[in-house]
Amino acid sequence: MEGEVISHKAYARIGLLGNPSDVYYGNTISLSLSNFYATVTLTPSLHLLIQPHPLHDFIQFSSLSHLVTRLNNEGYYGGVRLLMSISKVFFDYCNLNNIHLHHNNFTLSYDTNIPRQTGLSGSSAIVCAALNCFLDFYKVRDQIKVEERPNLILAAEKELGIVAGLQDRVAQDFGKENMDKLGHGIYIPMDLSLLPPLHLIYAENPSDSGKVHSKVRQRWLDGDEFIVSSMSEVANIAKEGKTVLEQKDYSKLAALINRNFDLRRSMFGDEALGDLNIKMVEIARKVGAASKFTGSGGAVVAFCPEGESQVKLLEDECQKAGFVLQPVQLVPSLLKEIDFKTLQ
Image (spheres, rainbow, N blue to C red):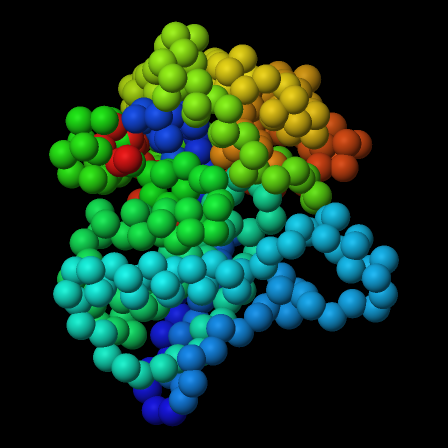
């Protein structure tokens, strides 16, 4: 088939401050990682084909024990289901909004280097990249507002039963007033030069990051005073963090990072967070680094206020524990403060 091959890249996301208040009409500060990303490629074709990834959608095994080991380590799901889901959500949205789509077919393929189940929005990145391919293939980019696109990505994940925060798709202000009025959040870009050096800690075989929100959200919906007040404090940490970053008060930033995690731990409890996830935080704190989850678990963002000597200590501790430590490499212009009151 003739036609242009379209390819889009979407980056992994770190919640620096304020998460998980994105699901609770809160605020977050988030950033995108240039060293972790997903790429989706759309090639015009005679039939519509969703192409399995040779590694992430593995369906051939050497034995039954190989299959079981694979499932235990990697889970059941690859990216094909994500591509199918966003295809359906995109089609339904366009039908509902009288957006005309031509009838040409395509083949979708994907690749990703985002570590699985690390709370780095790996699923969202695949879906986001695919949506961008559709916008160009069907030439409807000007008919679907930028502010609406995160909701489509969220809908695709909900279609699959994936529990994820709104900031997984984009960093924004999720306040209730804005969410109710606009249906999306307020996006406020920040100067990347305000950030100190940060590091990412993650496990090779983490637990599922999608299990963390459930009970706390129901308690929040029920008006549980402790959860409501604690989640409000988490959201305020992001607001305070914006001021702290602008002042480059990095000792205060470290305190806010630690407080953010401590509040999450008090709300969710150790059983929900998981021993492995807690261990990553505690290893960072052992050497005096500030640390918190990047998302719902599986990876930790760490800040070493004392510089390179402290980073070396952290590196040694991570190596002993079998964790991966990498410097955070930023995507230019993608640090955002987000008010989630507007997004649900």
